[in-house]
Every structure is written in structure tokens, then in C-alpha cells.
Image (cartoon, rainbow, N blue to C red; front, side, top):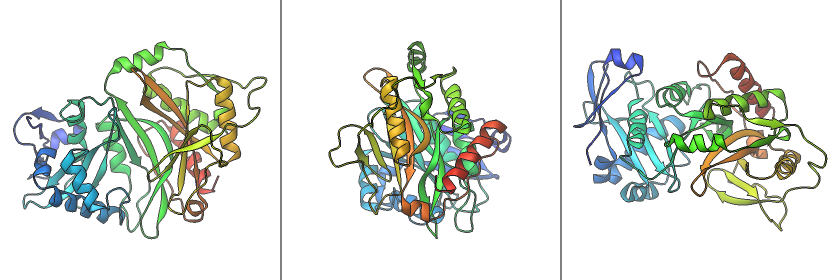
Length: 374
């Protein structure tokens, strides 16, 4: 496989532009040459690559809950489920990292982005190069959606802020926001932090096909005007059109919708379904629960689902595109913090120069609500 070449001089870097070519991948930063070790290179030394990734992530987050198991990470690099991109300085030391992670045959995550704190050179290159590999089909060519969880925390003494990652993912890479909430926790002391969900669809025809279908959303999803403003702003940016929202009517909201746990990773994920054991509850290892409601459900089923979740203490998170059989599907997301998550501290979010002032203000209001434990 040919390797993507990336050269960014000071002038090009300021404009956020880059050039692609075919030889070794390299980058000029602060007049010093740095190189990117591509997935092909990293698979030649999977143990060394895994150690370097964990070291960089640890310098930023303490224990990184997705990559702290070195044996699993080495195996994932070997079998190609994780495709690392490691930035090396002129001495061959790893200074920044990123990775493409296969979530399913249709979905890939752009993540594991971090750099040595306070280093002079930029650590943006691994994320940008990884996204270009995916866009050009050099890795996971059959996948349809590239996703990321974009950190929004303010900097603290121990952990850098997420402003650089926001600019890289949402501006240079071109991912589009779809959700917002205090999904994950980092640092010492260990605290919950806000992230934006963001993604892009490889084939625009899938977006066009979705827009041709008639979709209607129940207003019972929203608890206040700020949530509605954020949701509709994200939706219009993603689909290029307004979402149709109708008020509740008649019998909507009568009864409750059963939910079941469909998977557990760092988050407990729920979906509507029979659950004889009552509503799913947190265990000691999880701090955030996210429930997805398929937008293909009837308006009545949507409304009952949202009201059921609100009674259980859930708040709006946003929406998430996913693949159905030959078409795009949308999952409407609501989330809830565990008591442990609430009793710890939810760090303030810091989002700047990414959204309009109105959307930014509404996101701040949502963050404050989460900080006040719903």
C-alpha cells in the first residue's frame, strides 16, 4: 500500500492546508523535521507502538480507560482493529499519537489523540493524517462513518484543555457535532468531563437519501429552549436542512417504555426493549448511561420513550448517525450520570470559536445543568 505523504510548512499550517503525495510521510514544524509512523510501520513493532501510545495518553489523562490494557492494545494493533499514527521527533522519540479504531464494519472512531504536554511542536499531525487515511480509503475502506468524541474540558494543573482537539477535529478534519454531555472521566482527582460527539459520512448519497425521506421528531425530546437550539443547530449543520418537530398530541406519553442494556464499555448503552428485571441500573464501574431511541419509531413510541427516560433522570444528549440495512439511521440520545459521577466534580466545559454565539451560550447552559447534577 502506498503511504500518504504530508508536508506542512509554517505558512501552510497557519492556513490549515496540507498537500498529499506518495513517499514517506513527513512534516516540518518549527523548522525541525518530524515523521509520522503509519499503521504499516507500527505493526512491525506492535509492542513498542502500544507502549508509546499508552505513555503519551498517560501523560495527559493519568490512566486512560480505553488503552491502559497493553496486551489487548498490542493484539488490536497486530490484527488491524486499531491503526496507530505516531509522531516522532528528530531523535526518534514519540511526541504525539492518534489512532483509527474499528467499532463495527460500518463505523470507525478517530481517537487516542494526545501529545507530550507543553511541547513546542504541534501534535495535530497524527489526527489529520489518520483522518486522511480514512477519507482516501487506505484503511477500513468498506466503513461508512468516521466518528470522534471531542473533549471540551478546561485545562487544569494535571490535564491540558480540549481546545486544540476541538479545532483539529471540527475545523481541520471537518467532523460535525451531533451531541454533547459529560461522558468520560480523567485526572487526579478523577472528574467527569464534557465531550462533543462528532462524525462524518463517507458517501454523501446516504445523507441525500435520508433527507428525501419524511422524518418527524416529537417535541417531548426537549426539556428547555436551549436543548432545542443546540439540537437543531447540530442537525442543520449535519444534514443541511431543518428537522421537522411537532408538539405532543392526545395520547402521547401514556404508559412507559421498557429499556434494556444493549452493551457496556466505558458507558452503559440502553435501547428500548423487554427487560423483566426493571429499568437498568448503574454498577460501580460505570458513571454515565446513554439511551438511544431509533428515530424510525412512531411519534407515540418516541414520546413515551423520552418521557420514560426523563422520569429516570435522563437529559438530552443529541443524536447519532448509524448504518441500517443499506441506509442511514438516526438514534436520538439521552444520558444520565451515576451518583458517583454526580458526587465527583463535573469539570466546566470550554468551547470557543467553533459554534455561533447563540449555540455556544446554549451549550454552556447545558454544561451548567450537568454540573448541577440535573
